Structure formats: structure tokens, C-alpha cells
Amino acid sequence: MSLPTQVRLNRSFDIAKLQSDLEAAVQKFKALPQAGPYHDGSWKGISLRSIDGDYKNPVAFVEGGLYKDTEVLSFCPYFKEILDSFSFPISTARLLFVAPGKKIGEHVDVGFNWETGMVRLHIPIVTHEDVMFYAGGDRLCWKEGEFWFGDFAQPHKLHNKSDIVRVHLVVDCLVNDELLALFPAETIADIESQTVVTKHAPAVDINDDVRSQCDGFFRLPKSMSPLPLFGRMTVEGNQLQASIFGVPLPFGFNAVEAKKFKYLGNEISLVKGDESGATLSLLNSKTDQTFTIEVMKNVSFLTKVYIVFQKTVVGGVSWLVKLNSRNQQRWKKITGNV
Image: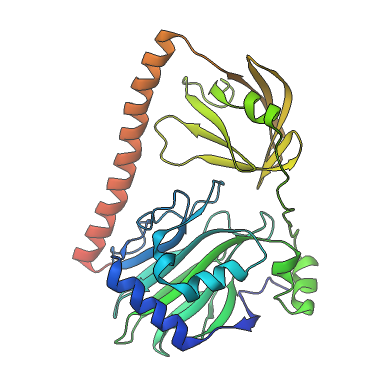
């Protein structure tokens, strides 16, 4: 037995309304290249939801964060209606475009699997029988207006051999009972017989004392980073967010208890706290390692100077990584080797 590479879900959507909203989106917003070295830059997207609410942000981030609707949804009422109708947590939602003749090379989507409880769903908006889409060796022949789960933890690739731009609405979400209800019951039973299916409980409210105590500066323990790395801990909504200075995106943990926050394989607990700061315990369930993080309300002048230096260095490294990925895309475009 093996896990299914694709499952059609028991819901469908109005094709005309999907394509009308698509037309509104492309008239007002520019599709931009997606991250990754496995295409030539012609795989593009417009974000409907992103980690910072910016439609230009292509990052499908699996480490958490406070995801927000982008301005695109203001012009696309049917897309908004669809996303608002889902009773499971949504992280990113993107319109993804593949131009005629273009390819997305074989790759896997790290972090998207049943064990983490993070899955990726597709709604084809414009497609064609000559779009060659494969996952786990199986061809995915999905029609416009249908709703599909794909197991993209398995190797997958695409070649658009048609003469049209293939467009899908791709939604990244957390597994809960409401999402599983979209699957045939026998399919879920089969999946659960083969692997752990992690279901995410709704986040709980965070009281003002916990919010105040967990708001401050922190330094990663030496056991996590031999180099001194500082960051900022904040609470937004019902989520604890840890931002490393210079890293463009935060790490987010949803409140599952009054003093406990969890995301994927990581769990943070508030051990103690007062007006001067807090002591947090970080547990990585996969490695069974526990780390202690001290949250401080204030840091010294020298630490503040170091933080400026850290932002410059780490930000520069992040920029170089992004530049390298973009250069790989350009090289693939020149050579045609995808």
C-alpha cells in the first residue's frame, strides 16, 4: 500500500466566476516569479493571502506566521467567498501561472505532509489536457472548477505542452476535522492506517499577562546557534511570533493552552514570567530536544549595536540566497534546462 498522490474533494466551484475573478486580478496586479531553483522564472504567482499581507510575497512558508488577506481579494469577491467559506486554517493562497511550453522541474514540497498536518489543495481555473502534471509517478488530470488534494511531499513536476497559460488557485492549510470531511471516508481510513495524521486544534485566547511577559528581546541558546543571534518575541492575535533580526519572516506558534504555543513539530511553554521578562521552554518533538529561551524587556547598548550588525549580515545572506535562486532561474531560462 502507498499513500494516495491525489484525492478529489467533495466540493466544486463555479468556473465562470473563477475565471471572472482571475481576469480582475491579472488586470490590476502583476504576477511575479515564484521561489525555487527548479524553474526558469516563468512560473509566476499572485498571492491572495501571504505571511505579511503583500500580494508580491511568493513565500509559501511552513514555519508559521500571522497570515493575512492581500489587497487582491478586494477585487475578487468569489475568491474571497471561497476562502472565507473554509472552516480550516489557511496560510497562503496563491494564483499560480505556468506559461505555454514552460516546465516546473521535479521537486518535493518540504513540510507538507500528513504528519505535520499541513497540506496543499488545488482549484484549477484554466487548464488543458496537454498540461502534463505528475506526482509520485501518477499523472494528475484535474479539470477546471474541481477541488483536489495532491501529496506534494512526493516528487512532482509539470510541463505545459498546451498553448494556454495554466492557472490554479493553490491553498495551503492546516488539517482539522472539517478539512478531513472533504475527503471520502474510506480514503482517510486508508491514510490513517499508513501514517500519523496530525489534526490542529483551534487556537485559544491569550490573556494580557502572558502577552506582556512574552513581549521582548531574546537570544537563541548556544545549543541552537553557536553564533550569537538575537530576536524579538511578540504576541499577535492568538499567536506567539519569534523574529530573528535580519530574517525576513517570523516563526509563529499558535496558542493551544493558556501558556503553551505549538506549530508543527515545535512547542513553546511559558515556564515563568513577570514584568521583567519570561523564561520559555522550546521543545522540538521530532528530535526530543528542549531549549530554554530567556525573554528580556531591555538589552544593553552594546547588544543594540550588535543587533544592527546582525541585521546587516543576516539580511545580506538572505538577499544573497534569494539572488542565487533568481540567477539559477535565469540560467535555466538561457539554457532551457529545467
